[in-house]
Length: 185
Image 1 (cartoon, one colour):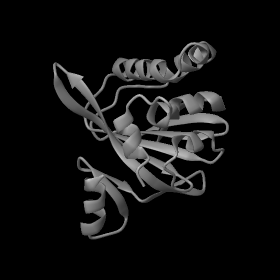
Image 2: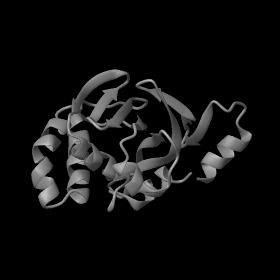
Image 3: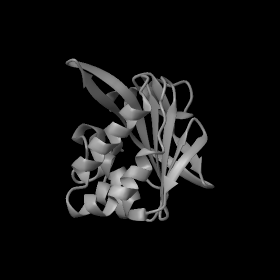
């Protein structure tokens, strides 16, 4: 949060609303013809051999800012989660990370209902390199994923889209620290 505020105060241009670990995010994004505003930023850290690695920096874009994860998840408005990778990751690592995260936020009946959606979703991904972007667009029709501007695929199920976004801002989220960063106005 401190980095974001300092970035805003000392930036030579207001084109970027935030910067976190040298990744800049613009204050607005146009998605499907709608202006979305940066709601907050976070970093995904993974531990490899007891060393914390910053895997990606993410920014949540909404039609209007909010600090309430439940309201955001249940809103019919357009949402975007933009992630910029800081390290290489094999497709299998991306898939495994999603499998682990979804199993934390979507248990029992939820997981049974969405296990086919999860399989479809995981099959979308390919390897990522440092600097690559994965962008998730959430709408009432589901979730669509692009990598570096190329559409990878989508899952046409609104509830599954909520599960995916819930990984970042749900109850429970995959990481409270990540949720706090994304919901900090």
